[in-house]
Length: 75
Image (cartoon, rainbow, N blue to C red; front, side):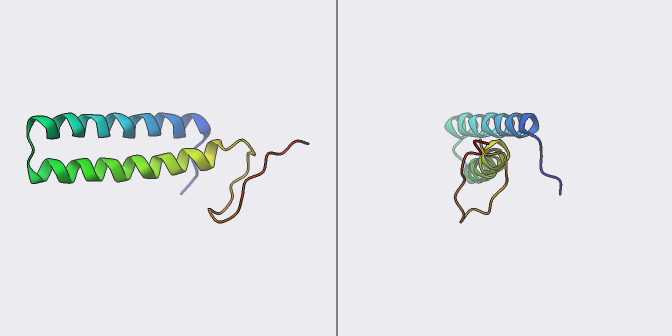
């Protein structure tokens, strides 16, 4: 899978946040198990999109494994 560019990552993150917000509103009006599951799914997708955006948009400009630190490239 190709890594998205910064703009795609930001829009994807925004879409995931909107889906989570909609799932929260739906659950408030109809607190069924199906809607709780939908909210959980939306939360997990938002978390994944957040991680994607962090990796793509990090200021150093290079992708790193999660266990390695990022350093700003000042060259």
